[in-house]
Amino acid sequence: MKKEDIKKLAENENFIPGIYNYCDRWCERCPFTARCMNFAMTREYSDDPEASDLNNEKFWQSLSDIFKVTRELVEETAREMGVDLDNIDFEESAREEDIKDKITENHECCQAAKTYYEMVTEFFESEYIPALQVVDKEHIANTAELQKSDILDGPPTLDEVVEIIHGYQHFIYVKLMRAVRGTLGNAEEEWEDFPKDSDGSAKVALIAIDRSMAAWGHMHQFLPSHQDRIMAIIVHLERLRNRTETIFPEAI
Ligand code: SF4
Image (cartoon, rainbow, N blue to C red):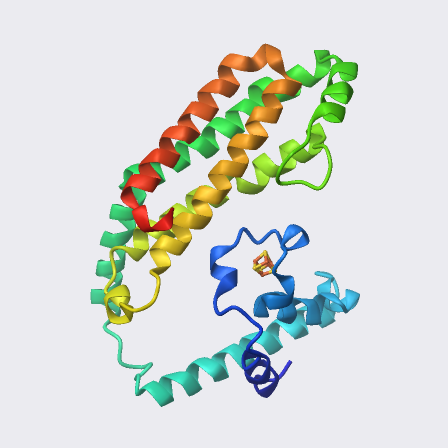
């Protein structure tokens, strides 16, 4: 794909600007693929099996092509905006970035999101795998038959529940880091008329929390004997949800 092709694609008014920054990257289940420029670009490459194969030279060639085009676009945009890409005080900006990174990492929401993904890892290592050795397989099948999930087309199987939990396990932390980090810069003040990036990131983190809580609810029905541990995780998510809503009221 050439620079001109990307620019032409970007002119398509059907695309929602920046939608890929506020989604869960679960393209297989996304209703907005037709309105996402990122999806259109990646499909261009993924339609070619050789260009998606890590062991094929064509994959690395296409990656190198994307890099070149991206660089050209950055240089062109910088020229248009009068930004000198060579004039950066690296030491000063690195210091500032370090301070912001520390503040972000220590923020209560980010800490709680980190605790969540650690709780998930611990659950799957210490409870889930041993539980599957003794679990009543018939109970799992019957439970799946009875379930109707509002986020899935059909009844969620245990595998699907696990997939959802793992899909969002680290995602919540990453999005909350972005949300908190976004409140520390000056960029947002320059774009007062637009919705804030931090609110968009918090919003998508909240959606991921909701879906994770629903998945844990299903997990509870699959593994009722592990109620205490599962409930502790759900309560933790609920607290994280409440704090996130309080700190980012515009994200609700
Ligand atoms: S198609 Fe994929 S990248 Fe685009 S908005 Fe949907 S989930 Fe996000």
